[in-house]
Amino acid sequence: DVAAAESVGSTADVGVSVSTTPASVTALSPGDMVTYTVTVSNAGSGTALGVVATLDLDGEVSFGSGASTVCTDDGTNPAESGGVVTCTLGAGGLNNGDTAEFTVTGTVSGTACGTVSSVARVSTSSCDAVSSNDVAAAESVVSTADVGVSVSTTPASVTALSPGDMVTYTV
Image 1 (cartoon, rainbow, N blue to C red):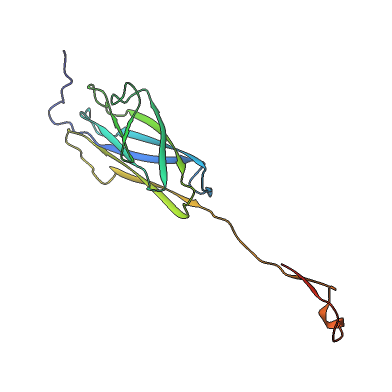
Image 2 (image 1 turned 120 degrees about the vertical axis):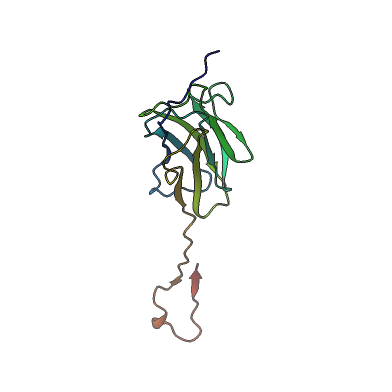
């Protein structure tokens, strides 16, 4: 086996971003499917070795499936355990200027409301020059029913009634 080696004096700068489909600004409803796309990049001058990316699904999102051509956890697909989806890149690492991505599809719980937030993280066994870009979050608003009440009467105007008249209320 030939192992990848880091050049002396070169450093990696892994970063991660995450987006959703439907887009984060679109409201989801309970029971909707949501797809996360996690993109890992290396902006450093050297190869990033031992790269592991994770997506921590919000507790209101259940894992459905994952897809990738770069993860080695479960063949070529990311592996999920306890709501955390893990993608380990191959032994060759991530070269400078390269990106890799994986997708995760889940279902918003039937009782979800408010904001669901899933968090992506990336790490490397190489020296990471900038750690501030190693975490990213995708937030989506879950809309719930907007319940209202209306009342009508028959006759339509209760001001035209006389004592003893029949009034029907419809709610």
